[in-house]
Length: 396
Ligand code: REX
Image (cartoon, rainbow, N blue to C red; front, side, top):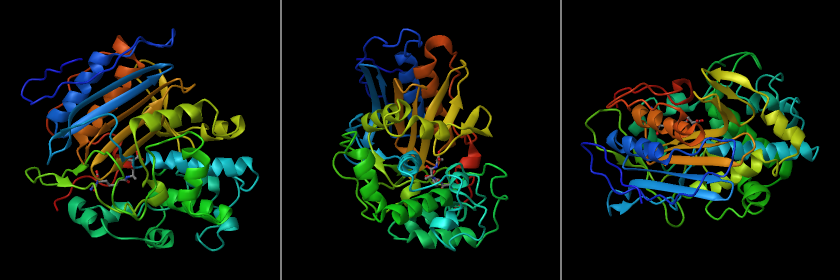
């Protein structure tokens, strides 16, 4: 048991189940540093935070704060949560399996499979999966005002075509293939491709191709149902006005994101998933190599196909995805071979300081003590990688 001590905050004990580091070449996980990072997220406004590391046969689990502000139930790494855009990696895996099965060509136009959907025949499947299509991200407008934007869609059910239509009502951001420009529209189109090519709902394909083979017991696609099944953390959305109370955003359809962000999972399942993917157990080696053809997407970052690479300060690169849905921030990353995997979650969002702090869990886990941890800034901080999240705060 590790007990966190950060001045000025009410802190619950950190529950850690440590073991020795597995990999002889990788630096030892800095559990103390990790605990400090998770506690910092609490001082910056997250009700709770947690992380799980799977490192060969060793498992480390750390959780602090509360999963539910009403009952004050303590956060547990067993709690399910909304994983936001980590869903994109699942969606990409399904499509790359379809490439393996010769049902899809990465360099074919999307319109070959979905005739007339997009206004430009030059937009390929590869452009969509790599955020290089130029299709405008309709969530920029949807969530320009954070809480009103969320409440307007919380219970709504969209068809994928309605979401694409919203995107197409705005100019495209770049010519096909010309630039990286993050857009949820791309992964809505990806979901439509899955449904067209298989004749099944995306839920069935996630289930048959990933959830069942990997025995993921906490992973669900329940859209358009609004509840998270079973034991879960509540998600708290931070309003744009500094003094306004957090909004419990747990229950929502996530229909605004669907195959771009509506999956529910747990830290254990995310680690199992990424280890399997990077270990070559979900696609052929050739398709994993396609997912890992990197385009720069910001300082120290690159995007492949539904997969991010982050280059850490200690020289190690990690592979996975980030997620931001109302009430939850997720970092799910693993080493190149998938043998060490980290899933870290805070149950708040629209809080740049917490997002930046949670990013530091990667250093603690993959760089060990090799990295000097800088003290987390208090109060507001610029949102890390702001080009990838809906626009900066505006007043509600
Ligand atoms: C939605 C707005 C942000 C969140 C978004 N989320 O596009 C996707 C995702 C599904 O997970 N993206 C992450 C809201 C960044 C990724 O790919 O790594 N923000 C919030 C606002 C801002 O409403 N006005 O923070 O909850």
